[in-house]
Length: 196
Image (tube, rainbow, N blue to C red; front, top):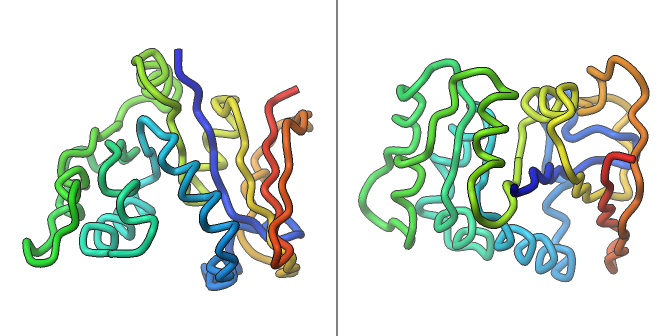
């Protein structure tokens, strides 16, 4: 059975974006942190995300050339959407300038059933871990339903004061065990947790 790893960037005060979806601070330019994130992206057997995140990524990654483009394009995807297969229209891009693996966006598995049942089915498949990318509402649902096996949080040295949290839908405190942490030159810190 493969694990589900939730990977999220967050501010020091626990927000994954500002109140108007501001995320420019995530792209800090810390090359060591970027290399760590790319290495972990390659560790996925499947990238999963909510429909809004999927639409944004499907319109960007197929023609992108940055260091994240290869793992984001070449590793299979699943999108969680009540829209059903119609969501895959977001994965259709112009044929010009497509990167290797870009067709995977249009071939994504569409999970439109019960969240717990869909995740259980994906976990039962053979292969490398499932990496969940969010957005915030999707991450909150995964957390609230106890579906996350590991949290891979990149915490940035920035306090936003307000924004979108991912731990706001807990019915009770959730205890986590710190597995590892790594500090990067510009002050961001990768923290890996498992449910205690």
